[in-house]
Image 1 (cartoon, rainbow over the protein chains, first blue to last red):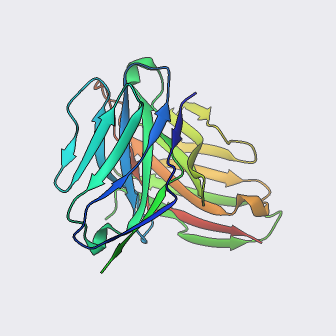
Image 2 (image 1 turned 135 degrees about the vertical axis):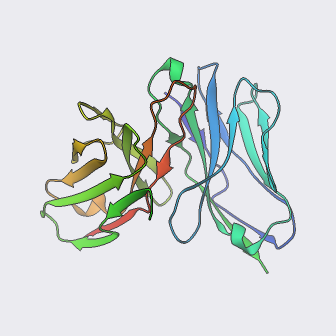
Length: 117
Length: 115
């Protein structure tokens, strides 16, 4: 079974600064997907960024980027030029490649990020 | 209109009551999921359905049942609610395409409190 660990329950950073959220995972699979989801106070789950394990290049979406270290099973999220709207709970999640079976998301416990004005 | 809707959005009930949470989607997706979110535990999968005739247990199915009434509707029932079922419940959907990955789209969540 897969496990996802987020060791930072809470973080805070000043507006416009850069912040990095950590995530580690454990799996015996060779091909899989990793995700970061954002959950603002509205409760909506919003997909921020996705990384495919067989791609060495780190994914980037505007101010959001990841540092994917497959051998270390590490998948951190960097938020650059942080904005007040980035205040949310962030979840790291894992999904096996569909060729390996059913597509189910395994989530970490979340990191509550607060952007300070 | 939202693609994935959940009713009710908030519900308070008493121990022992039967509760049904409903999920509807207009995305035309075959696959539907129910997750539960608890503080400090993240989201955990309760049940999932890959089509109307295919329903599977997730990691925490005890105390829950589901019904897939149609492609677009997937209901979660608590036959006899207990306080430790107090949580935020999410429905999600995804396609069953031939690609290697199918994104899951989440509903707005239902906050359930069992007194």
